[in-house]
Image (cartoon, rainbow, N blue to C red):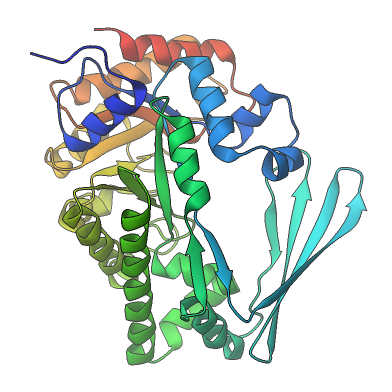
Length: 378
């Protein structure tokens, strides 16, 4: 007998575990744009004044749907002196400069804040290869401490309204790219001696697994998430991804499962070439399986190929196109894509009807309503 009376969080967790639910969860990715629109605040206020977990809770509750979001630990570095300063560029835009001084070195980065857009990196903390390893050494040192108090409080405040997951960070390549930028990171990982690169990758793997154990020990989270920026088939490519990032994710998955917890990975862009890898790594859920042009999971054939590849061992989440369908399409266009997902995953316990990345603020409400209603139909 199928259990009734599921909470939004309960539906998501059962889908991650491959357990029965009364219907497919429907989980649009509400991240920055739509919650800010709903709350009536600009992007600067949203990022600096509104707790992220609260913005998502407001949005998922407003739409009476399922969903997921992330809570973050707070990192500090003993011996590091960090200063920040703001400089107005023009009305509605400013530059924030961050200086970190640590063991005789200074790392300077800048970020642009804009009332209309999420903040974006302007310059990275590492300017050349000579600074890269010292900077990464700082991030991996014993001087780094993570406080999970705020994340645990957010988990309690969210309750059953949606699935709040603990953010574990990024795969190895993305971690390097956050320090020096995508192009320089590609040059570094492909030119540095392999043993030097692999030593650093193993150190990062060890650090990630230790951080995972700490989060499991100190927090009540049921599920953990690893994000994605450029570490994907579309930019990094499957060969380098398998060398650099797959081992890290697999190691974290083992730690998470040893504690009876769940692991979700966010994987932008094309994904068809690595569907079997998701199974091999032992992750519990992958999103967002984007449609073209950003992704490569198109129509019924693509969806069925993904379902076959996941083999009822990994949960599918995503695929409703956020631009061509949700923003530019009609309610019937939205319903058609939802029906395709439901038909492809008929009788599956491993499906969440989600979006191909975050919902844009321009999305008409009638299109979101069509997504919710069609997903709930028997």
